[in-house]
Image (cartoon, one colour):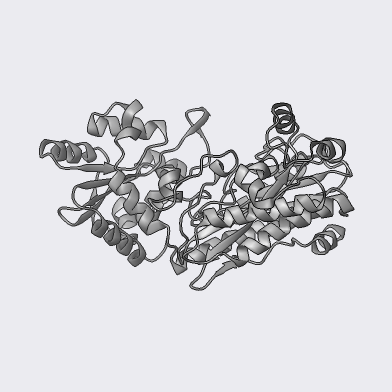
Length: 463
């Protein structure tokens, strides 16, 4: 945990942003894999971690706006559990570590909410995403479990986003710890990427690095020589020379802050000229857009600049044609770059998206663009100092998408389908991704930059 003053300050910030009522921050419970006592690795709810910091199942945090009281509802561990788990701190001891003096047994939460409802007080909660918390909210509020997300407090959602989107110095330290673990994951993958190796060997090795670094991967590892599938979690292929292996992975720090990086490398350790041509377009899109990332600029405009750079690069190798800006306006680039440039990152790898991705990534001034490819941009709004974001341009050759666009004549005036099919249809995909802190005057890459230039990558892979 951070120092207790961090949590007290955060709850005070939330209290000032809220009008009135009772704020419920539900922690997570254990989740079973295949029978009750065999559980998945426990992961605490991120909002609970942010405001209370206690990384233990079956806790509820309450922020009483009207009475200026913060409370914890949880049960002390009984003797039966101590036999299996060893001695455990009391709830009051854990609560004190986050600056909370008022504690109650878990079941007393029902008395609290019943009393609040009887007095017509507002009860604020975030959108639940786990079934047990939906059912718990039904018990507390009477709202049907299937409809609890509809009744989540928009006032609370906006208040939390307004606080969590600006990262504190202590949070940046944690993110950089995660970046250091992620660096080792990627360099290990580079050194293992050899012809004849099964992808699962590499995926398993780098997952082990994340686990040994303090926690787990920040999301399920994406690793495949078929990088044209954007989120490819299948790891059963045997690596073949001439292919490229895309690895998109990250780690959680001991306090659950995330990293998220992507590198694409040649199986066998040497880029072909064709691979270099496409790779360097993606790399230019990454480096040039990092250079213009700063407060006051919308990430939507930076995404569109990445699309322009990719279009220009693909024109240079003959895969696209026509006026660049008209091609981007028409969305022609999206056959090759069918996703957004990046997203928020923090305690969640897609930070706060459980609160509602549009609320997190957009505002009244900047709205999503409803066009294939750009519609998947998760962060479009104006950047502020203290944002932590990902930047991850890519170029992909997706046979099913190529066939659809060609058969329907989509953007045929901007795409050289003959060359795409003749020489690039089985190319795969390339994505490159760094984690970026928006600073006062610009931005910086967090952590030591994972080898990315072709000569650096080839050198690491030769060791």
